[in-house]
Amino acid sequence: MGVIITKAAEGLKIDMGDGNPQYLSQPTVQPRDGAIPTIIFTSSSGVVNVAIPISNLETIGGNLAAEQVTDLVDQITALLNSPISSLTAATAARQDTGNNSLAAINTVIGAKGDAAATTDTGSFSVIAFIKRILGNWTTLLAGIITISNGQTTGNSNLADLNTVVGAKADAPASSDSGSFSVIAFIKRTLANWTTLLTGITTISTGQTTGNASLADLNTAIGVKADAAATTDTGSFSILAFIKRSLANWTTLQAKLPSALISDRLPVDLPPMQSSITHTAGTITAGGTAQQAVAAQAGRKYLFIQNVSDTPMSIRFDGTDATASTGILLAAGGGSYQSTSTYCPTSAVSIIGATTGKAYVVVTN
Image (spheres, rainbow, N blue to C red):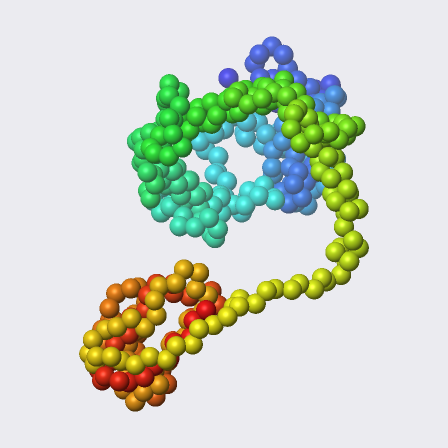
């Protein structure tokens, strides 16, 4: 059943066939959105019941005259009784003011065939944006799957990392080097700390294993008030020993003349030699070794010189000298002289190639 609109004493009567007719007050014409004139019917409570745009009422304003109502009622009745399919579809130009047209909205939404956006900024449709988001999620999911499989690019796999970390049941490492897990290292460290703590606790109570107690050490050191030890032997503390040593030094200092403490003292040293023996000798047989000086215990000085024009050789260990094993004394003054720190005491052998060649020996 359609809607029947008629005039009544109470106002405009709208009967929708439900037994509850509505009465509307005098209609007014006003622009609904500032562009399209609209007929507004309001009830006495002010609630809008009907709002119908009328394109040909641009020149009508204010309240409608009574004679215009009949024609208007006929138009409204025809409009309300018309099937929706017969109405003219809205166009982009008739969209609500302040919103984009359907074409513009369609452009923003995009089409199913739009490719995914290639960047996070720029101009692209909502569908292109959604496709980019889906692509990013696919990439992220692939990475998560890779990690869950135990492999990250450029790093050891999770199994290797698990081996390095170790298991809760791993025993402590038995040494400070070698191959062991992090958990084994931590357990060894904890064990070392426990051992150290035990030692510290022992020290704090005055006793370390294998050493005297701190009380014993304190007794050995003594106290500041300990008297000086009265003897060089016996039982006394280190402080008592130091005090005795200081007392002895004080006593010794009192017995020394001041010159020994503050001045240099002259020292007389006896001469190293008291007498010398000067001997002149000759080669008795050319090419044959002979004794130049006999052995002499306590000898302090020895001098031998070749005063001939022929080379000679000497040897100090009691063995006959030869030209190849002896010390060469050159012709015309070649000599040997002992030092102040060493002087041979054994017999000295001499050899020359020519009989009758002279040499001299000086000893002490």
